[in-house]
Amino acid sequence: MASTHDWGRTLQKEFEDHSEVCFVRVAAGFALGKITLQEYLDAILGHLKQGYAKHKYDGGGEDVTNYMEWDLFAGAVKARSAGIDPSFNGMPDKDWLVLRSLAEVCWTSNDPAELDRQLEEQVDESPVSELSVFTTDLLLVICYARRHFAMFKHLISRSPSSPQVTMFDLFDSHIIATRLSGYLKIHQHWPKHPDNARTEVMFWTELLNSRWVHEPMRNGLSMALCDHIPIGREWSEWVVKLGSPELEAFQRALVARGHYTSISSIGSYLGMCDTFEKAQRIFDIFDGEGLVKATGYPNLPTWASGGLVLGVARSPFNDNDLRSRIMALALHEVKGVDVNALSDGWQVGPGGGSMASSNLYTALHVAACDGDKPLAEVLIQYGARVEAELPLAKDKKTKPADIARQAGHVEFAEWLEQKPSNRASV
Image (cartoon, rainbow, N blue to C red; front, side, top):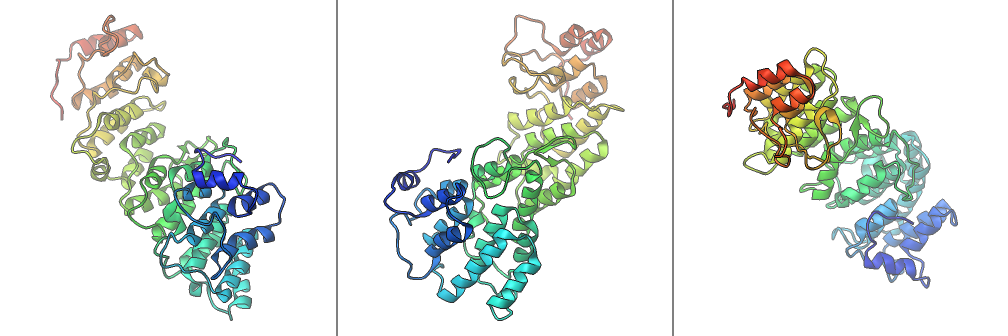
């Protein structure tokens, strides 16, 4: 059974101890098809009963997120039973039987009507809104693990409140990563699929808007939601489509909670835009002032400036001087950008190709290599230095004009050479 992290001590000990069957042994048996769903749910949920028989490995300790990565549902029950929320004192038999019955429905069905029918039979026709918050929380985990979005939305939209600590408050970046990767060999309760990234943002939009995830959010979770969701063009697989309604709703939900995508990621998104209107929509969602404030620095760090301007400069789309128009928009919206910031040499070179680390480029160097005079004009207007040389290649001629000439753009190179040095920024 794989994990992206080294297993914590408690998890490892439990896995190696054959004398007692607890969370790990039950989860492994279910993953390998050695026990039924009913046996799995009985054994895992049994830890939540008031007065249940204690096991050696029931404590939470430092391994909760490792458990949740390995088996999302079993890890969530372990966290709840271990007292991660001091207001939870176990479930009386009546509440537990309701949870057990509804857990199986949520596991096997994505039809809210089926859940409502089961509720009518189990709880004297009580609606979803009268379920305990602890029951709702664990049912949401099941729906999330099984990617039953219709059932998930039905539950979360009808719950009047959330527990003091929800299981989603415990999420970290590596749990999100296992949900999105197409290659990690980690058991999940739903098959890997190219559409999983799209459904992932739909789940988190509901969690954010309902405030089922509390503030302050774990740093790893915030980072995963803001910058680790794979976003791509319409022909890409295993990504959320840039500009899709699902992505925009998710991004607006993040911003409403004060969580912003990094400026370097914004640069990547802008570089994917094949129309000016798509770039404008990005700034309709992410205001420039909020993006700058979210960095936590009084001045934009180099990686933020470089990520923004290089993301636009290396865009493959340039009909009607699109790159220069998007660059002007970005520099107008995001104040304080250093247009002379260098690219990450291992990441991108002129024209979008990979480069050796000794060839760090500015956006103006990229424009020079591509012969993109309109882009160069915008960059120079905002302070790009025509005299800038590549810092790790001083044995060569590496001013932007030199790069343009080497790429065959002679007239453009002469135009750059006529520009004064140290032009004041806007």
